[in-house]
Length: 147
Image (cartoon, rainbow, N blue to C red; front, side, top):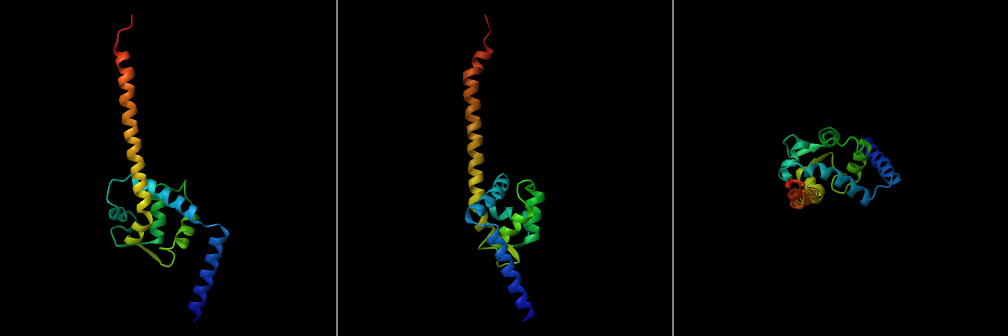
């Protein structure tokens, strides 16, 4: 009984903290996208990306997830540990679990990772196009002798 009451009190306190800090879908999507941008640069399958957080297991602790986001992905200047805590407590798929499953990770981050990859590909293609256009326009004049 004491454990149930303690869990209930902790949940109520956590729910109040999330509400006070205006946890919303837009904020959540922004946080997911910031993580997705870092993960989108890595060239491997989505299910394999989860191994960064889980060390190859099918689940990852929330502490491992936070550590990997902040340290391994280098997001400590963009995301605070408190923001990650709020995300893990407020996300519909993750809030009632003490760990993150690979399927939940994919469900939460797949869209952001795919969008990030699409944006990287577009930037690379645009860079190649601009470089080619520059070379076609100015490359010919640069090789001409001046008279």
